[in-house]
Image 1: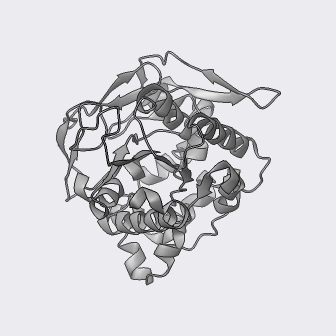
Image 2 (image 1 turned 180 degrees about the horizontal axis):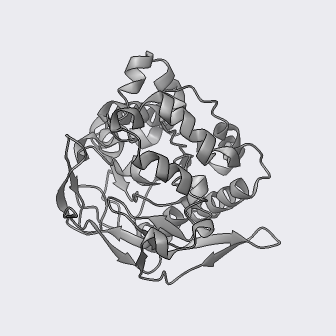
Image 3 (image 1 turned 90 degrees about the vertical axis):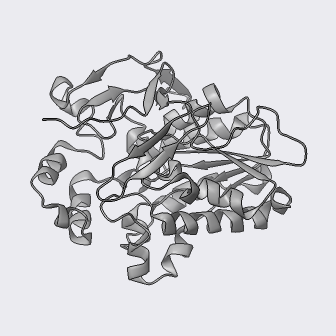
Length: 336
């Protein structure tokens, strides 16, 4: 018998899916459920934010995927809310979306977040998003099957072309979609999925298994060259975002996975993202890895949830501290 799964997202014709507004759901995750709350706009927040910035407030728009949503932890433990808690006049509007690529995160800004007045923007793409940008289907969160998503390609002039919008409102089983088109390209490759199904849970989250899985999925190879197809697409998506925010400060915060912050995998992605670092353009890159790597190996392991790849409350704390240091160095007036 299949288990009942609470609906937490709804169809969106441009993004593919978006969180239900005014959601208050206890989500099971192993032995440790967490409370997911959204406001009337579907942001991961218990607070409401007007479109116009209130007097004497500083406001941040935050974009990302499930690591930035805070999947697996309660609202109060997300790094967005930790940032707010450190500064009484700071509002951090969390528009992150679980299971999304950087392409969808750009479209979240353009279709939902753009009307919200802000002083600063944080775009926090997880390093695995480089694969998600190349596909038109994504695995469903918390259930089997896939769903359609929008995607971009680059034309001969390296300009972005948007496809699959309106997004087809369909969900398919893994057997109903051509494997080479999606599943074999994704982090969730067919061969890896088969291995995971027969792997005991105690081994599935071990360093040994996670290191071995990289030989199958090749998740980060797109960062090896500045001219790779996948990085060229990621760079164009981020540049389109930067160009739209009217020269307001933009902080690009690449979010590392466990492979980088706990297993010391070479962070090749950093040199790619630093291509976007340009103070004259008011665009800055924040590397969060130093905050993790000053910890002991055991402490770094504790920055990930026990049976899930996402950040634990301690991991969110490290990310929040790195972002605050970056803002304090480049734009201290935001924190005043």
